[in-house]
Length: 70
Image 1 (tube, rainbow, N blue to C red):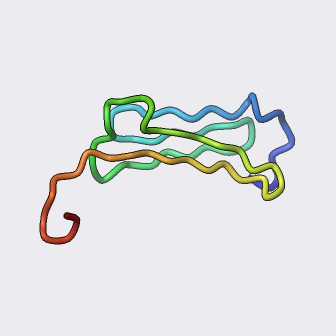
Image 2: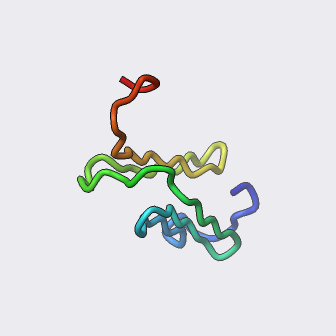
């Protein structure tokens, strides 16, 4: 979000069903999540890096164990 001129308070991030939605006055992002997110609100976080003008979003997903992720 390098060209974002508004306040950080104008940036909204939300998880709706299996989508991560981030919006600001200048940008809009709607990403489909491959797995459902964990229901615990404490397992998700968003942080603004003012030096890089980046929003860092962490979403933990409910994943079944298989031969790839165990």
